[in-house]
Image 1 (cartoon, rainbow, N blue to C red):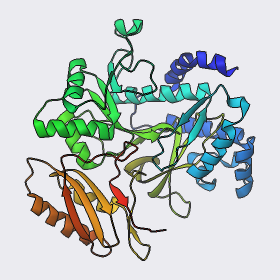
Image 2: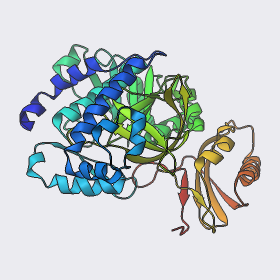
Image 3: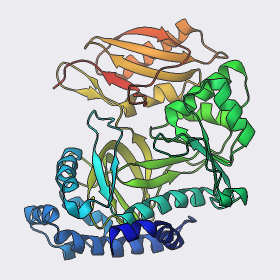
Image 4: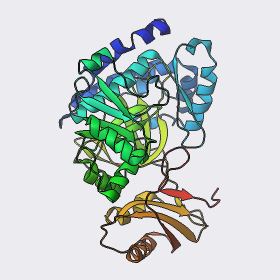
Length: 431
């Protein structure tokens, strides 16, 4: 079908896709896994006819029929971000895709990446976002949604459409750059059922509310997007915004592939639409390692075994994989002179078990010195000096050798230039 006509039919595709997605999760994932296997087998047959992927099949001496389940993808080459960037840069110049949709990532790794979607693929990705809301229990048709302003939106002040006037698909916006008091007043006036903003933007409002006592309306559901939410952040969000926190995980390249629901300590994978594997350094399936994602809906220009750059742990129940923790790709490691590292996974318990810490960032200035930016709860049990002693003592029990620490006490920690907030920043030359 002509891409221009496909674009006009995107809402039709979206509605049709949503009806076929699993939108309510129980303890039985057999149907979703069966659908995953069926769609994977179809995807691999399509990919075999694409030169970029034919080379990868040949590299490992395999054919499409060798891939029957999601676990079988552990035998297929990993697709790195650099490989995808190079491939997409060539395809963007292909006239065949001039009427397709080209998205660009935020460039959190320093190099923005263009990714090409057919209109049907983009419609599926949008339907999948509505599915996230359905799984959480939100009704996107009748509910009231509020989000940050999208700078590409033609009407960033809101969409006062005919349907909205009828109470359907209501969606308003809050200026994420407005003063905290003003932004909170906008949220309070609208009383959204679903609120989503970048985590750092929402954290700014929550820190202000926590410090000043200003109340923020408690949405039924809210989703701090684009960045990993650690356990201390989660506790503060719940304190100021209520228990309805959603953690929907994905990327601009893949879409939302899994969700952590309120009160849960694990992520449910959308198995009917994605394969999410955890791979160790030897390329084998593992309980701890790198996240590798395959969107099964993306069949025109597939992303097979895409290494998103995050680390994760997982567990299995009745043969089904659940992701139990994620270390966001925004975080560096702590490095030592001999090349060894300490990950954020290892130091997380020290921070998570100290509710006095509201926000924290570690900056490794040298192999001997870590600069710590930290925000302390005004109602903290420990003083600043006691917290410094707590962190120094307990972190040095974890590090492979002791570090010196310097502390910078702040009201809030500013995000990085790309609007996100790394919790570990390594400035030493470790290449």
